[in-house]
Length: 275
Image (cartoon, rainbow, N blue to C red):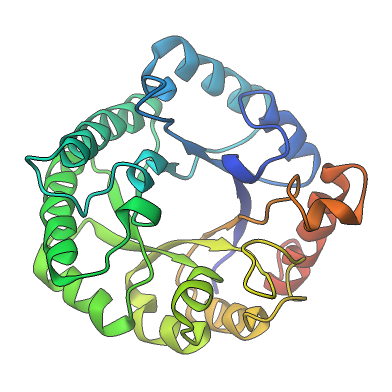
């Protein structure tokens, strides 16, 4: 049975940035998935000085970096053709993001497809597959895994893996997005694609709101999904993605770190971490 590690995504941490690693560690976490940053801001994590700040704090506070998310792809999506403004920025994001992950020793690069990057048509699907091939070929030089995060059905997911045809392409699974965006039964979907899952974002919610409930208290059948994760051992890293500093979760306590600590306790009990 897999011994799970519990982390958090940087954009859900009440204090993002290098010093946030200290507070995340104090909350009982083992690692943080970093955000590469926006194109408009020059991709901050491509800056050697900023990389060094994260590395120093990671070493000092005993925090790992299991993955890096190229969240800029939600604004400048891979679903756009190569010869468009967004398509060209998507390629630049991929190239620079993989290079930064290599420089920081981060083993997984996550490529999301949401918002302006959502896959809504066959053309979108083709364009995303095209860029995933590019990403995988670049990442293979550094022994980096590329993990696509989207809300495709199980059948569409398997089709994407086949069409891209790269061994270092995996799935970044999420415990709420599939239900929130498409109404899919998350536990059943995971049963079909679990051999290809690399890491998992864990969050919960209700009333159609993202990351809006403590783990296990929403309507996404998280307990059932957790049972599939535990039985299949499809991942080592579980990364919290509840938004503790955003309403409605922040209404529970004045201090968002108190809410985070509550979720950490729930997650550790749910997945048998430290038991």
